Length: 197
Image (cartoon, helix red, strand yellow):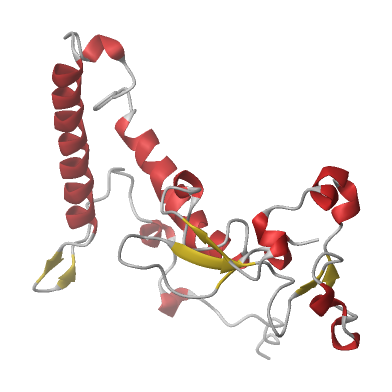
């Protein structure tokens, strides 16, 4: 089942210090899930709600945490801070938001690692010791990559008085037009006319 059905729901917004009050999905007057440890969630109206399978962990049923015995709990700001994000991981909105960002990020990684230009992943291009020196050289290489990307963008979008800049042809072959017969010499396709008598 989807993990969002088991998420703890915030009761209020975080306070000034970042403490957040959450409640179990089976708690409250209109629970999102059913749980044997929350008798109010086992009403007739909640018969089709998602059951929380506490029988998977017998130690939870015998020694329930505060979130199972109270209506809500307050979490400090550092609880799960490393993994906290505004958009639910794996949700449709998460994929919509991060799929394009990741593609752009991976594209830029490949761009700055191009051996013909910055070659950021080549340690031989950064022969200095120390984190500060490496950070500075990396910053310069990223600057050069960004300038190169900006120049490429400007060149591809350059506009002059007549409209978009037309690139000159690299091939010097003659146009196919010189091989085509002129329109006046093209006869109408059809049967040959009868001979004159």
